[in-house]
View 1: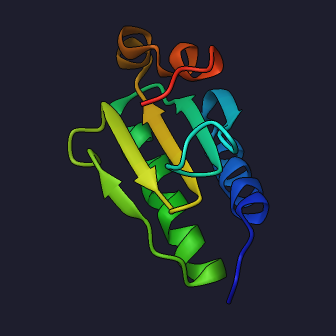
View 2: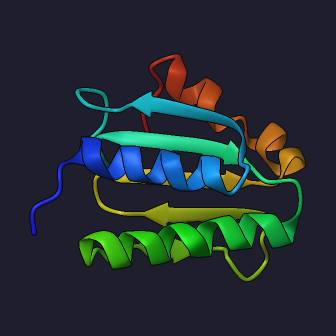
Length: 112
């Protein structure tokens, strides 16, 4: 089943909203970086919430689209990276997000 990056993005945003993610930022990477079409950055209030939001999103993508995602950092729950191929998702605890400030780098046109 071929799924567009926009469809994936919509499902990811819905999953994060359902799980009460905070400060959700969506960044369009098309034409900026070859790593994906979109990046989503959000926060969870605790390591438990960060891990749960990540797990729920991966499960939802697998159930709805048979789409596997690469996940890094779920065991610690400070910063979880979910790579769906087309959409890269970063779920942070607020303090960790503030320290790295990823959205500032990407929103100012920075590249990796």
